[in-house]
Image (cartoon, rainbow over all chains, first blue to last red; front, side, top):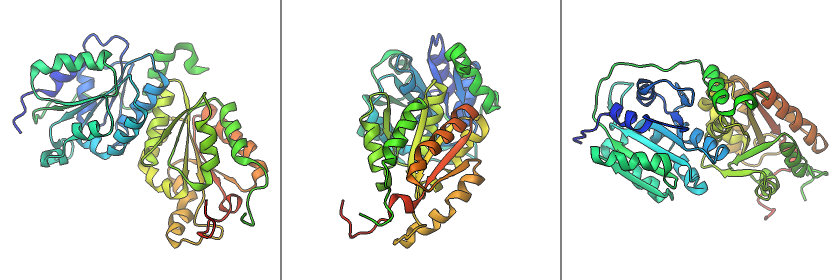
Length: 195
Length: 178
C-alpha cells in the first residue's frame, strides 16, 4: 500500500464546520484523531468496547432521524464488528455514515497487520450488505465528495479511507465514560436529558 | 403442548411492560422462547425493531439509543450472554441503562448437552459483568418483573437482566414441530 492521505487531515476535513453533526469515535487512533480535531460535546469517544462503534452509531441514528450521525473508526475496530454492517444494511438508516481510517495495521498494539493488509475489502463488504453508497477513498480530491456525503448524502454510507502509517503525538479525549455520556445528552437533549 | 407451558399470555404482558416504559428500540437474536414477543414488537408502530447478527451488537445499539434520548431493550437466549461480556463495559463505565430479556436454556429438562455449560454460567457471567439479575419463574409475574427491571435499568442507569426460566417457557424437544 502506498497511501498518501494523513488521517488527521481527513478527520479535520470531516469535522470542520461540523454544524449539528453527531460523532461516535472508535477506540484507539480514531478517537485520538477526533480529539486532535477538537474535543466536542457531541463527539462520543470510546476507550473500550472494541467493535461497538458502528452499532452505537446505529442506535443514535435511529433515535435522532433528523440529525446526521458519523462513526469514525479504524480498520481493526471495524473488523471486530463486521456483523454490524449486515445489521445496519438490514435497517438502512438514511442519516448514518461510517468512515474507516484504514492504515492496515493495529496501531495501538505494535502495528501488526490487520486483515485489510491481506486484501480484505471493507467497502465491498458494506456494499454487499446493502449500504446506499460504499467506496474507497485514496486521494485528496475525493475528500470533498466524502464530506458532502457525510453531511447530507442519503445513507447508510461507508467510506474506507486508505491512510498513511504514522506515529502521531497522542491527543487524548476525556476518559470518564459517565461524564462523556452526560455531556453528550445534555448538549443534544437539553432539559429532557435529565427528565 | 409441553407439560410446563405458560398458562397466561406472558409474551403479551412483557410487550405491554416494555411499551409502558417507553422502550423505542428493540433488538434481538431470535430464540423460540421469544417468538411471540418478537412478533408483538414487530407489529408495534412505536418500536424500531433491529435484528442482530450477534448479541453484543445490541449493547452498542442500546448505548447509542440512550445517547440519542431513546430507551432500548435486547432479547436473547442464554447462549448469547457469553457473547456480550466485553460490551458490558459500556454499562459499567458509562452507566448506560441496559435491559436484557434472556430466555434460559440448559437448565429445566434440557435435551441438548451443548446448551448446558453457557446456560448454567449465565447468572454468574452477568453478575461478574456488573448486571443485576432478576429471575422470572412464573408467567403471572412477567409483567411485574419486567416493570421492576425496566425501572431499575432506566431510572437507576443500571444493567439489568431478566432470566426467563426454561420451565416457564416449556422445554424444547424435537418432537414438537413448529
